Image: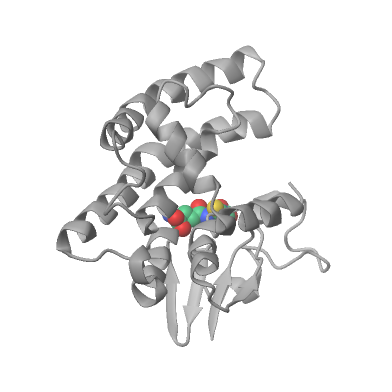
Length: 219
Ligand SMILES: N[C@@H](CCC(=O)N[C@@H](CS)C(=O)NCC(=O)O)C(=O)O
């Protein structure tokens, strides 16, 4: 039995996208972030990252988490790579060089893209994009993103996908970090190859399915 914990408005989209790509049956438990609830401990609160039942699974109180039989994995990138290795066929790295590239793109996403892109998403989520504070945060984070985006842009010259001339787990994990900035109009315009790659990722039926489900969840 494979179970993924975490709502679609969380990093759980990464493993869930891979599971949709591979048509794998799994149980989805949409544990919500406790900070999104007025009273996470209320008797009628939905299962959340501060619920004792979830803390018994992941004492760190973060989603996603995965149970595959007795195996508990936390960290969205580890879960997604594990699932690619287990189920992903051509979505997984094929050799040592691809293994290195896949880890590289995941770490670039986690260390250089995700945090500034999430800050931009939060500016829009809070409705402060047109305020001086919001503009200043967006300008600073856009500047921070320029170096990793330049790296991705250069790599994608003459390529449709990040590695091996096919869509892989690397495209899933990196594009999910890059897309956090997409609420900012024109954010990708300076990077046409990156922008076209993100559009290719988002044209995949598996991503469209998860995006529809994500948008159906309360904000
Ligand atoms: N590095 C972790 C980050 C996990 C994380 O921060 N998850 C957020 C949701 S996307 C969460 O569970 N937050 C709940 C909280 O902070 O209480 C990963 O990639 O899985």
